Length: 210
Image 1 (tube, rainbow, N blue to C red):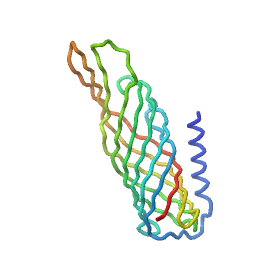
Image 2: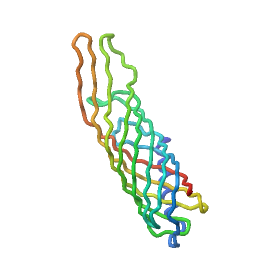
Image 3: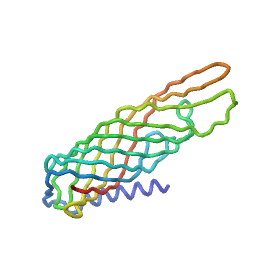
């Protein structure tokens, strides 16, 4: 319930800064910037819980409309067991993404934008302790792989070097997972299955222009 309320507030903030100052002239020189952000990741699979997401990166403005950025994210989610898929445990996701951002005409201190991105996602899954007989060991692994991203955002300039931004993004990522059962009596068996690791992300951040 807390996560749901926070996501609603972040969406309202995104809408609010999308309305402030609209119709003025947004002017920003081509320059390098660094940023940090925090928010929430809401996975597509219902048995993977919402997690707190953090990120950082840098960007280069090519002109007043086009910006290229590189972002590094991180979040953890609790996982409930689902038949034929992941068992109960903790999931760690670390995406590395390159993005191209297009800014619409806004204001001197404000600019809404859309973005598209692609990159690679690293995933690690740690099983909760299972009660099994001593002869059997069970583990699960999620393969790393490529991902696509799309979303929208708004940025508000606080000073010539400092800005705040809000983003709503969708990260598309599919992965193969493997359940490995090691039995002293019957040997090693593996069961592979596909996972929808896509997630909806909402984040707030601070950007500093160098």
